[in-house]
Length: 315
Image (cartoon, rainbow, N blue to C red):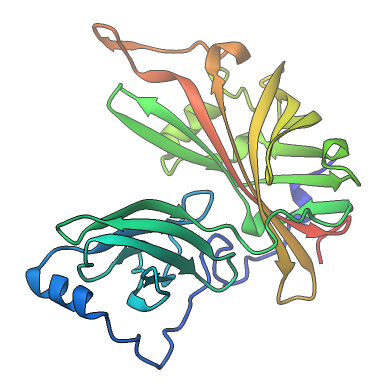
């Protein structure tokens, strides 16, 4: 139903990947002076408040701002996240504080921070939800944009490390229903487009030992239903056809938001993952390289980063 030729001649615009968080500029004004007790604690030393600012799918929210106020509402600390999403303030006086994490494009998150006698307060990982993240894309047809999608597969090698590959030719369509549970997805992947960065290994993966790409050109997925798993998460139930074998496969799907693009279109972003057992698709090839250790792991992790453009075709 969909072919990789639909994407011929398209080149990926040199825009920043959708997963990257929006940068927030530091305001010109300085933060309010710390209270005397906070200043005394700062002189005593200590790490202060510490947090990791992340999106729901684990990306760092660069340059998020965390503001700390005491029980009177007075600001006692303010810090900006670094490129890894790490926030650290100066030491705090022992006590209870309110910490608010903000970033452009995200819904602010407020939490209670308790500083110990050493002046340290650990918030752990703070997850910021994208603004409008619970609002679903408008109903209708959405077309996958391969220039801004990644279909990746990871397998264990020699029981020591992992080998990562991706499929470079594919097409797909999402139909968003008036209710999420009535939505559906269909995708077709050219099996021979597997690319792990090693020609010899890729040729073996295309052979009858694995994908059997000469006999079964396409890998296809058709959804059969959705089950809610959270405000912006679903389990997608569907059928995967791989190397001539059909099996039910569920995808753990996260909806990342919708927004306009520079070309006048509307885009929706998703992230999904699943794990496949090779033997379920008659891929039983292996070699025992030493006692109890196989050349290739028995499972393959599949990760999908998807951008879809509103409409039945790409602009």
